[in-house]
Length: 220
Ligand SMILES: [Zn+2]
Image 1 (spheres, rainbow, N blue to C red):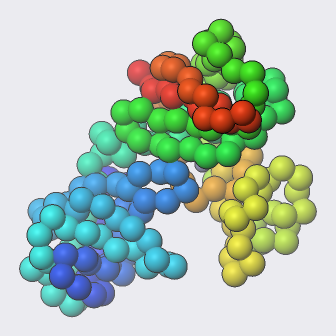
Image 2 (image 1 turned 90 degrees about the horizontal axis):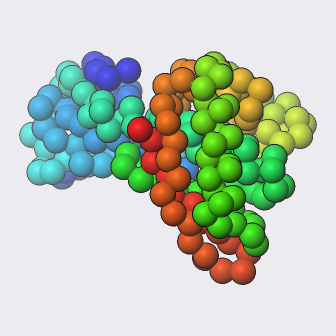
């Protein structure tokens, strides 16, 4: 969804809360969407509990109850979706090849990075993994999203990879399934089919400690 209609629920200086929003707030390693509310620039969306705050570049002139047309900066958002889906395929490939798990990630429109708990990782192994990622993406796998009760999700091995992805207060989890490549609990934005990822390009690797290797990549 690129554009949406909503109503203003509260205004505090440059922060606006709506009754609904298509802005994906910063979190889970993904940068925030940017865009506009009635033409005013949204520089960042953040989340506190279930509430999404849209931060404008100036004090808001909107009032409680005002109808709002929201628009996302779609080119930016679409790149985040492609990068994020690519990161999932990448984590699955590296996990399958080495058993390593993701220990962190930062998904941005231009350049993204994923950290793995790996000891041996270099340019050559990066090329091999990226090659496999591109093979998997080219298979045109559908990305499916559905919801599961927390207990059921936790009973399926491997579904909730990060311990803090399922705090006890959350009783329903959103599951994202990328063909036969990756299934996990995930609140982020993805493309509908891995063909949309395009070509993943490995940029460089970094040594971030004895058991931590960082891989930078982009999509073309
Ligand atoms: Zn994700």
